[in-house]
Image (cartoon, rainbow, N blue to C red; front, side, top):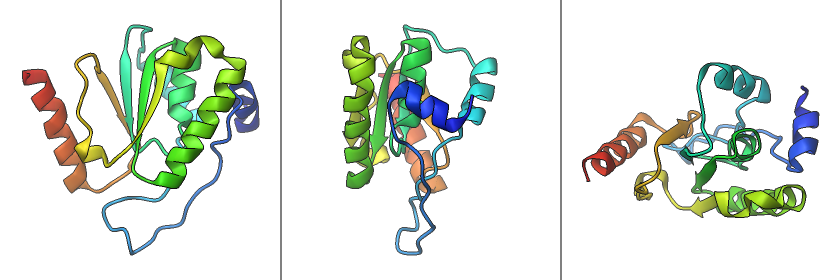
Length: 149
């Protein structure tokens, strides 16, 4: 299926790309995971309706809507950029116009990924190169600490 077909099916707008900026060294620019890559990933990686997925650096929320639509899973997108967070909320509003059953299973948080507190039910995590290795390490520590707790 073509990107435009997915965007129409999900009733969202997640296209576009951002250029690299030297001003923000630890955070990478917006670049959505391609739908083709998502198709390939989910042929190999199993997602269940009972899963709680966190997408770190979710951008405009493409992965969240894709997973919710095809797998009915609960998804939380973490985005530090206020503009992209607002895009997520707009996309959520549009998505729910066509897919009302999902309103309680999609959430977005505007915060730094390394400050996000892992929920007790959250069991799968997605990263698409959104930030530096230093931030990635802090998030992995948070995930491991949540397992111990």
